[in-house]
Length: 156
Ligand code: RB5
Image (cartoon, rainbow, N blue to C red; front, side):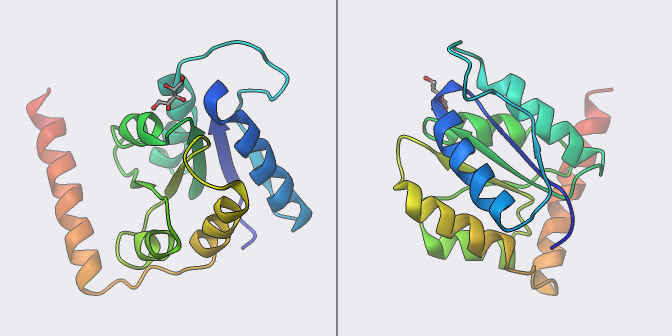
């Protein structure tokens, strides 16, 4: 895959974010690190970092991205507020694969304090290398897009 991959975390996910970034750079992948810096000692708010990445996905500037926080939960909740974002919280290999095959997940969310970090690298590899199946699954994604549109127009 030659497309740039975005990555961001809060303080609770910065160690795993750094491991994933190094792992992907070693494979010559183009990584856009949106913070927080590994060197920072600040406690930051995960919605700020989810927003950085989710906006780039929603606008089509990036196709795929990875978000890490302590549990992965806050990042997934925040990212899924953005239209066109399909953020999947992954804790096992099966979900890493299925969220691509069936859900075309464009953001992978991981919890630094939950999962084994070597396994997390495996989840990233599976997620990056699995292609959306389309077909009946596209129909289902179209229904999600319809929900987004209906909610968007009801808020105007
Ligand atoms: C930060 O302590 C922690 O709440 C955050 O990283 C995340 O787990 C939230 O969902």
